[in-house]
Image (tube, rainbow, N blue to C red; front, side, top):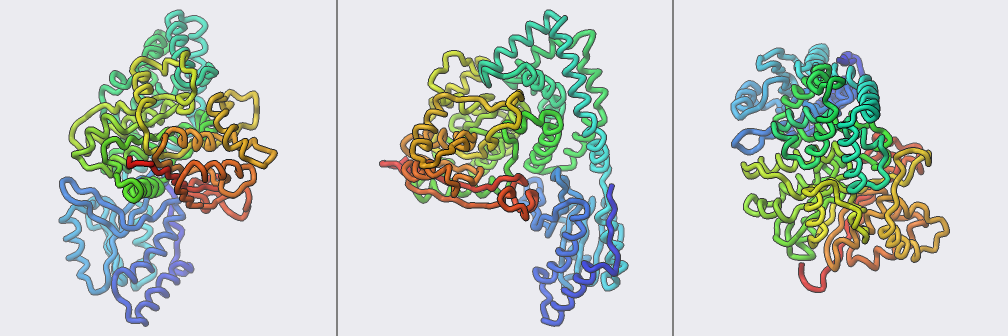
Length: 584
C-alpha cells in the first residue's frame, strides 16, 4: 500500500491556505466556493495513489432516492477508497454529520470538512478530529484518510500483484495440458474437434486451434468469477455458449485434470475478487470493476486477440452522452423515443454490454419487458466480454423489474459475417445461438450504436490474429468509399471501423440513426475523401464531435491524459441520421 508524501511546507498545502485566505478577503464564505480549495488539495494527494477524485458521487440507498456526497476517491478498478463531504464555516458540523449518517451515508472511511475543522470516521467510529488552522493537523488527517485500506481492498491489491505475474504461467500450463490431451485422450479429441467446428462455423472459418484453446482456458479461469459475483448458481446450465464449452471441459476433467483442484490453487485470487466486489453496492459500479478486472486479466493472457479486436472499453460518461444524443435525435427528427415499439436497437460490438444497459435505463418499466424480449440486440465475438455482457444485461433487467429473464437478444457472433450473402456454411455456433442470430438479421434495426473495433492490421503477417476478409462488406466499401475517392493509397479503408460504418449505414435501411465512437481519421485525412462524399449522400444529418487526442500526429500529447481512451489515435463521436420519407 503506497503512503502519502505530504508535508506542511509543500506548495500544495500553501496554495490551499492561500486560496482560503483569498475567499475570506473577498467575503466569500459559501460552501460551493470554499470547498474548491480543499478539492484541489485532495486531487493533488489522490494523484500520488493513481486515484481519481470524482465530485458529486451518488450514494445508493435501498428504497430511497440516491444521496450525493461531495466527492469520492476511486482507484483504476472503480473501488471506493473514501468519501468526502464539505460544509462551510457557518454550518454546525456535528449536526450535519449526524444528519448524513441518519440518511444512509457509509461510515467506513469518510472525511467531513469545513475550513477550520475536519472530522474523520473510519470503521463506523469517530476516529480523528483535526484543527485545520494548523498545517500539521491538516497533513495528518489527510494521511489517515488516504492511507486507510479496508481489509477487502487491501487483500485485493495484494492479490492483483501476485496474480498478474501468474497469469501467463497458469495459461501456459493449461495450454500444455490441453495440447497433450489432444494427442492422447480420445474423448477429449472428439469434444475439442466438435467445439472447433462450432467456432469455425460461427465466428471465423479460419480461426486457429490456438484461439480455440484460449477460449477454453478463459472459461476455466473465469467461470467461477461470473457465477459468484453475479450470484447466478446455474450460469453454466443456462448460458448457451457456456454449455458448449462445458462439454469440452467435461472431457478434459480426468485423472490428469481436476477443476476443483485447479480452483483451489487460485482460491486466494478468486476470494479477493469476490470480496472486493462485495464492497460495491451499486451494480453498475460492480460492472465497471469487473470490466477492468477482465480487461487487465485478458490483456495479460491474450494480447494478440486484444490487439486484433481493438479492445478498448468505452468510458461511462461517453456512453451516457451517446445514448442521450440518440434519444434527443429520435425525438427531434422522428418523434420517437428509445422506449417506443418498433424502434429496434443494435449494438454490433457490445463488449461487456454497457450501451445496452445504459439504454435500458432510459426505458420506462412498463415498456421494458417488450423491449427487452424483442427489440434490443447486441453481438460480441469474444468469449469473456460475451459472458460479462450477458450477466450485466440480465441483472439490469432484474434490477429494474424484479424478475429474472434470460436475454435472448445477445449473440456470440462476428457481426460483419452476418452481412455476408453466402451463409450456407455458417450454423452460428449452436441451434440456440443460430436462432438468435437469424432473428436479429430479420429485425428492422433503426438505431445502431456502439464502439467499433479500431485496429487496421498487425505487425507480423504470420501472427494468428490476422484480421479476416469479408467479401461482401469489403465489396461495399470498395464500390462506395473507394470508388468515390481521388486518393491513390486506400489501405486505411480496410480498417474495421470503416467497415463498421459501412455495415451500419446499410443495416438501418431507409431510415434510422448510427452513433459510433471511433478513430477520427475519416474526418480530415485525404484517404477518406470518398468516404466523406458517400456519407454526405447517405445521410441527411451528420454530427461529429471531434475529441482529438492523436498522439501520433502530436507527440507532445500523452495518450493517457489527452485521449479519452488513452490510445494513440484520435477519437470522435459521430451521429449519422437518415430521415424517412414517412415517420418511423
